Amino acid sequence: MEEKPSYAELEQRVKELEKEAKKLKQEEKALRKRGEELEVKADSMEQSNKALRTLLKQRDEARDGIEEKVVANVQELVLPFVRNLKGSELDDKQMINVDREEPPEHYLAVFSNPIHKIPEPYPPGDPGCGAYKGGQEQQGNFRCDESVEAHHRGS
Image (cartoon, rainbow, N blue to C red; front, top):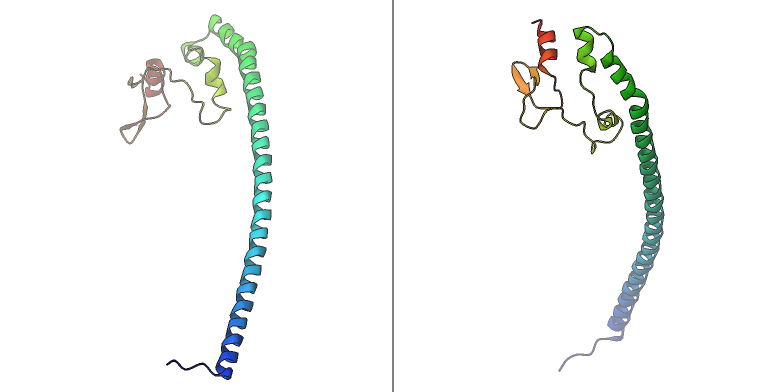
């Protein structure tokens, strides 16, 4: 037969259980408080994200407007000037600079994000004159025609 616990042992066990219950209630209260804090932070982050999305949308719209204005200004102001220069009497060195008329996107690429690239004047795979460093050709956007290369090499 099993012995029944004494009154003192039962009293000790009740005190331990009360202590454990009190500790669990404190932990539960702390967890609820932390959960509420996290909800407040999540709401704050959601509001911040909405505000940032709005700002990004406004920035993109402003950038698009600026791009359109730059293209219009290049077409209206720069390209006619370049065409007039082509018709004037220029020496060979000056003519090199106005020899090719770039599309407006070429000028726009300077102002826009990396998604917009400067159009390549040479087809892919055509080495053009390339850019040289230490005798090795570098791949990149630098290209020139043969007359520019000859001018700079002194030929």
